[in-house]
Length: 275
Image (cartoon, rainbow, N blue to C red; front, top):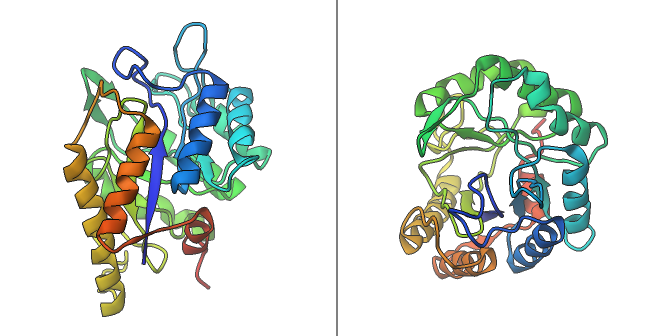
């Protein structure tokens, strides 16, 4: 059993709250490469307009970032969607669809549920969730499902069911697990499940208990991400540590627990549909 290490390089907060976030395309590429070389198999990015310092959800900007990182290292690089849901679903996922159509993305965000974040209500209407999952089925990318509302976990299997093989093995992680707001982004240490279709709670979606060997291996992964969360002290907005600092710290903690880091190919293999 291996632990997936993901770094989210910047997020949506801007330099006011995260002064060390990379904003320009060259900065984002350089940090993504450095973190992947240190062991992050997954890199999540938000594209920015360099002049205004605001997010810029445009496919051509993401294309430069993804191609720049992937030209140097093998890792999974995936984009976000706009925070603002006051638009048609097709418009909100327009950049994702353009990137998927050109075969550039392996994953892309689909967030069920809604949550209050620092005075802002992050809303994800069911129509938008269904649209995102339909794109995943059509183009074959993985929607790493974040449950921003624990109650929405119950709905995810129902949304996935019509997608068939394209949605099998989609990782489900909750914001409350290891979701560290970092100076220049976030680091997440995810558990890796031996078989596709597992929930965060550690059971298959059909309710059966996992075999003993899998449960024991999973517990080692649990210790790794819990130790990372304790070391980081939870959310750390405004910290002066860099993304690379956090990835290196996470790697040391993970390896100290006896777990090993997954490569990008390990992640891909774990998510392959089981026949």
